[in-house]
Image 1 (cartoon, rainbow, N blue to C red):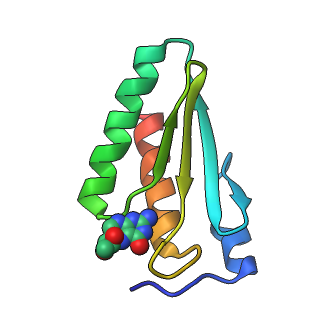
Image 2: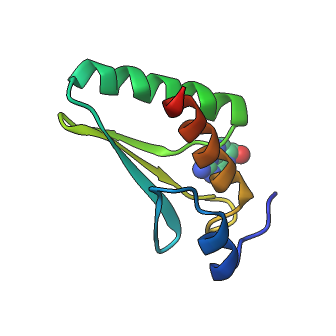
Image 3: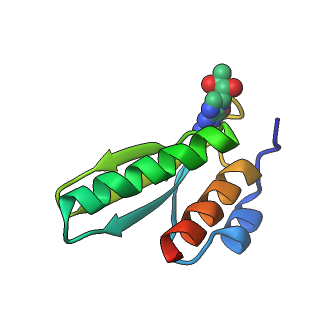
Length: 93
Ligand SMILES: C[C@H](O)[C@H](O)[C@H]1CNC2=NC(N)=NC(=O)C2=N1
């Protein structure tokens, strides 16, 4: 189990475009095609399964919202930051 990050660590390690909302880190990815968003959500799910660390994924007509927290630890850990980095690297690919 990963340790909870301090407020300073979260601010330092949060990838660009991600926001902290209480015990979660959040990013909205905009898509102009609904099914591209659906496919992106599938890719995020595959990363989550590989990492065994699962975000909340909200698919909207305008885009996809990803919300990450470490449920067992009750807050934000390195696992969340790593997931955000992996999603960013895939999205950028
Ligand atoms: C039993 C527990 O749900 C599992 O150990 C894993 C699965 N995926 C998970 N995902 C997230 N975001 N937090 C967890 O604590 C977590 N735990």
